[in-house]
Image 1 (cartoon, rainbow, N blue to C red):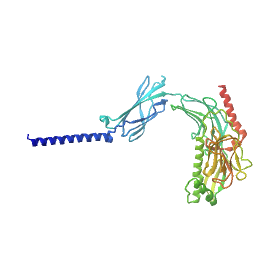
Image 2: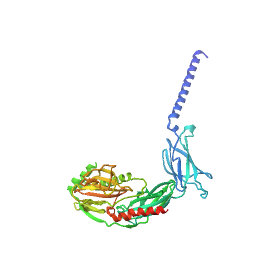
Image 3: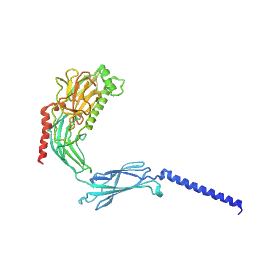
Amino acid sequence: MNYTNRRKNNKAKMALIYIMIATIIGLGAFVYFSPIFEKNSPKISIENEIYWNLKSPLKVNFTDDTEIASYLITYIDDNNEIQLDTKKLKVSKGSIDLNIIAPKIDLNKKVQNAMLKIEVLDTSKWNFFRGNKASKDIKIKIDRKRPFTNVLANSYLLRQGGSALVVVEVKDENLDDLYISFNNEHRFELFPFYKENYYIAIIAWPINIEEFQRVNVVAIDKAQNKSVKKVPLYIKELKVKIDNLKISDKFINKVSKNVLSKSAYDIPDDQAEVFIKANRDLRKSNVDTIRSVALKNMQKERISNFDIKPFKRLPGSMKFAGYGERRHYMYNDKKIDEAWHLGMDWASIKKAKIFTSNDGKVIYKDYLGIYGDAVIIDHNLGLGSLYAHTSRSVVEVNDEVKNGEYIANTGSSGAVFGDHLHFGVLVQGIEVNPVEWLSKYWVRENITKIIENAKKVIDKK
């Protein structure tokens, strides 16, 4: 072979080598950067340690950058090793939500500790087409016992729109949640009371719920064992007073538009719609604000004594509206809306001084739409008082106030024309009937005496 041919052959070999190198680099780059060769292992979303009652399914989520190819879930204890069944709840690209079905084991053999072993494989071509694998071991505490729940004492009667007090005993070393439910709709928090394993709450029958079904104490532990105990209450429905109130263009222009504007709401063009937006939409927002502020600022410390006194009427005042009146609003002789009146309206002289009736902490001071400039005071145990339509207040949020302390002056701020005080009593943020809380007899028989009797029962245990 002459020199020229050898040179050509060498060039051809070098070109082939370059092509092979380029091909290898290209393949390597493709493998490294291609989504089908992604290198991240799936993620398994479940706590490292869980409680399980072997009744309720366990929820788990798998996610991956590609898709889940397969998974294996194994239950292991001293006596068993069982591959578990699952039920797919939701499947989308790269994500699976599962219910893990409890194993069928001999429950006569008391098992307290076990383990879940989870392995998940994705559809990636990484690891020589075997995909990425994730595994996780979860410690399990087996708990099949429901919390012990007992109603220790409670008020005799609950009226629609009214209040009652409940004292309960609840025991469970793994207690996770505890509350009182009204009709399975409204939740009332329970507060630690007097000694360990005892709890107390003031509850309410919200006025907008006509049908009373039942009040329950609900206790749930970390394994989702649940106890439900009925609170024995006699009930009394509300006799509703209907008030037909005429709404004028003057009220809409001077009051409704003003409260909407000050609350940063758009003002509709139609006069009736202006009133409805203020009376319905803004009112709901204001009521929601009252509830959220009250719930957020409730004290959670153990309660041994609750020295609540009857609230007092605005000095020298007359009542202009009562709690529970159902107001029908008429515009041009046509009913356009309706709403509950949720407090007491008292009026005396303009800018009359307002005094507290109980010690407490100021948790709200601000403009509150239809309520105008308002002050809310927390009195502990989820009980609060509301002072609305004020012209001036002399307290600030977080101030501690004492019984008989001057806090504000009456006014006409908000959705009103005349100077007066809207006084409201709150139970965990729900406005309840103030008439009960103004009565010395009612407070003694339904609050303080129930607490005293409950403590005597506890001391005997």
